Length: 374
Image 1 (cartoon, rainbow, N blue to C red):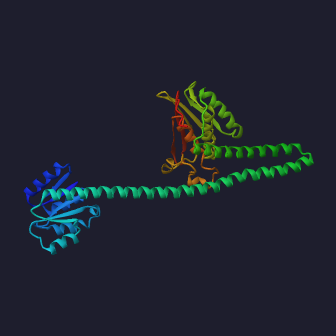
Image 2: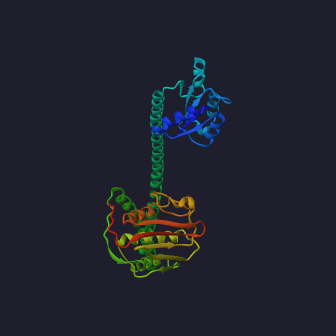
Image 3: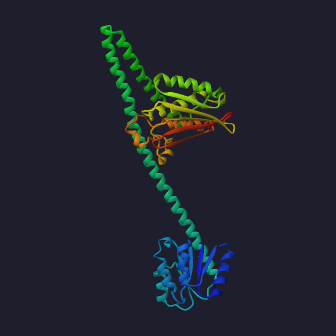
């Protein structure tokens, strides 16, 4: 917007009409004091400022405006019918003026100057936006690199832990076999099997990340009943966590057309996280609902919960909630993988959580979606 400041009404009206005829948005002020009040309230790209005015003259107005942080990018063109000497022109530029035009004003020249300024202003604004975008992108590369380095460190540790455990159990097995202690052999075998399963899950997650990055995560879709899948998943989870009571709530018998194995992977991830982040509790709810020909599946725990400012990041690659990363193991890629699986089914994924009261991780899938982003 352009602000014209002149104490002569005829000048305001004529200049305003000319500029508006050329599609400029124009505001006016009839004194320096009024101009300052308007500059405080509004943002102006350009101020066309008369020098000779009663009260505050144009130079004083410009000097006052230069002290406003809101108007530091606002350009000023001085207009003067009386002060045409070099010393006044010099003062105009030193007061922050972009240009100094003497009256009578040649409207064609003034219009050319205004149009040129606007073009420069737009180009400058675009350059600033590009610069900001580049700086943001550089900072995002830096953050991604830090996350990647952190992930490599965590992955190395997480992979080394079960391998070290398996190695230890194998050594114990050897000694127990030599002694003929079959009960101890069985016990060590069971513990080694648990560690191998952990290792298998870690490697599977790493392979899924690789497939997602290369666009090779494929889906084999078919129609299945969600209840049957949930029953199967609960049986799997109860084998390693018999103390948890997992309750299914909501509608029964809903058929879904999707990759059953991948949906199972998502639900298992939700349930294992619910158990991991709910120390001291023993109940989890699975909520199933049918909404607008879409299925809603939510896994509700009563654990530590997630702070509101961190909820938007939990599905990011390599993200781990800071308060919990010290206490709970994990690569920080499980939820990222589940999010990719659901998104590539044409669905939605999210979390509802209150810190200290628990979380509900959920997904929403179309019942008959043929969407596949691969």
